[in-house]
Image (cartoon, one colour):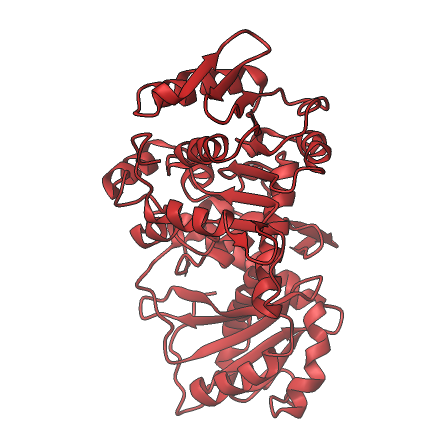
Length: 466
């Protein structure tokens, strides 16, 4: 890469140190497949060229095939970038370029190894055995036809490798999304067992809870930042690009289709209700909700601020349900809430009611007269009332939140179901885990509907806007 005019950056060195490891027991590459998922403009193309040149220079009679979105785009990159870069470098005298259409090749004179291109078809890679297959811009491939074409051609080649590389794609990028999912599973398995897979997987991306406008997010996601890319450039890209496309290109997130709007959820009002300085007051109400598949649980809090607006916040969200009761017990001891709210046994969280009671968070004998710290169980009519009141409060600007990513995602992906002439948030139809939104909705209702009756002469909440 240095000879080609772009000395490798640290992240590129790291990838090649691992991807090209030799197994001392066999003398062959330790990895038959290498996956690279990294944002745009990070040096991926230069790295791929370096890998190809290394292969044809190091071993005799090697066959390298490069594929991009289409054969035409592969030809353009091969001719305008790969061949021209080598010809402009000190390595120019070591190669011969053959440009005849359909028979393109960069041939290393000493080894007789060659770099060619192929189309994105089932017949790609057919012919002589293949030593190195490159699938670039993997986001554009909607199926595994290239992999299925390349793999059989590599069976008899002991040092064969399949490389694929791409920035994030869309929901239509079926093959790339499958590969990213499998790569993460390989990493998790390696961490858990210490057993090395035959696949080397590298990925830099920002999970949804990392804000797109935070330079710390860019530093975690863009490995070329500070080398060939600056924060000022990324900031300029953020200002001019659609947020979803910025996420795909520079945070390496999968771009998802914009969900249709549910008329009952005023999600367009949500961004204007964000207040990063908002805090819960002394008197709070907690609520818990569980996702439909029970994979995640959320605890929300609501509290009246000094200006009369209601602060809502996601206090905690974790996988599973086993952590919820201990967490609520600790929160109750620390904050002495007015009430702790939960939906009835017809909701997923209803299964936690008995455990909460056993842990000391009990329901009042008279449900209309709870005392501080009591458990309030919402029935169906209570839930529809809570949902309607939250929607009204959002439209009227009477709530504030901290712009927490899981909560905002829940609001944006929320769907509702009809309950009589009213409606409630629907965990099944919602496009994401809606439990954070349900939790703060229930917490707000509990605060305003049950909080006043909890207060005694020593617990003065003051006026509470309904």
